[in-house]
Length: 464
Image (cartoon, rainbow, N blue to C red; front, top):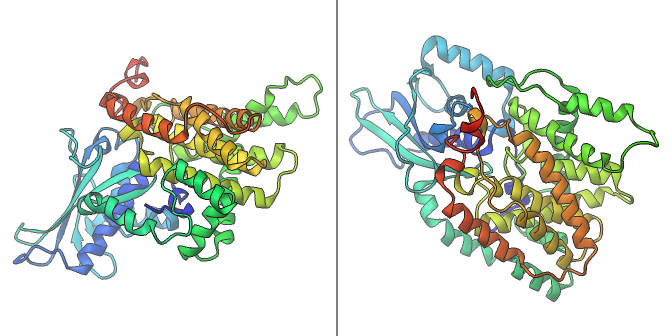
């Protein structure tokens, strides 16, 4: 399946791409289905009431990820990339007062914000761990329309029918690209045949995809990422959610600035810069701020941190290098998502921070002049050393261990890129094998370690 750089990197809001952004998009699409009328149940009257039911991981960690709020915002017509926080708060207050949703193209719809989103803690739906069902009823209580949605990670949303046909559609899309690689082996072979870098092949595929002004889009992605780092570095205080986690990026950044020019600074202080950039992003994400999925919200700090490291700390950094970084990272992210998963609810955090580290390592290696073989090697090193990583957010919040985990993911990404650049690209474990191993490991992993907060740190930390 062809995945654009703008599929892998999406502008959205925190705290979770699969538990916040995905459900919001699903609810907004349900409104479109109501307007369309094609799947309305024959014989039913006009829709007058709405209901949403969350299943699997969406139910277990939905409160911590504000999934219920996200669904309600989607039913009010909001989508993540254009969400106006002030307008959202106004509309939520109006809904609480009236119990009525009023959106363009539809009549007034009854919805109780306190009871209209149901958390079903039974078995997950069969298609994916992140499943939800949206329903509309007529005045007599008859079902007017129902649709099942799956939030499959990174802000990607599919209906049940789309989930069943995704592979077929992917094969159709693949043949229309000049360099239609779906695996790392194909990517390397096509690079050898064309003489092009991974970034150049990705650029050619994006141009055919008609993605508009590619460079302007890439520059916007980096601008949002960079601004998110800056907001995180400038903001202090306690993160929402009840854990009372204090933001640390601001204080660490101030200390690093104060140490500037100190000849006695330890050489490993560069790791602190990488960590603080990543932590700044994930603190913003935890606070519900604007972030870019990279490839998910829970792992949103890794790629921006490594790009900021490249721009501010690496010799010879260029703006073109940042664009090539994003294109290369997206190519690797697409391979991982196509052949395994980027969903913590499906394969654990190896699919989130592990994938992000692989993408960042590949991007940095490319930006620093690495060959295609070295880029593939960098991605494999980074992913290999995240294999088996669980997703066990304490209290269902994307805070502990997630914020620090992004910092360590960024450090691993830089180390992986550096190791790959010291070699010629030859290595024992191909990236495709590592991706398949991640898929198998995620399949075998106990469900309690996959974003349900029923195992790991989430249950072993006292008082949580």
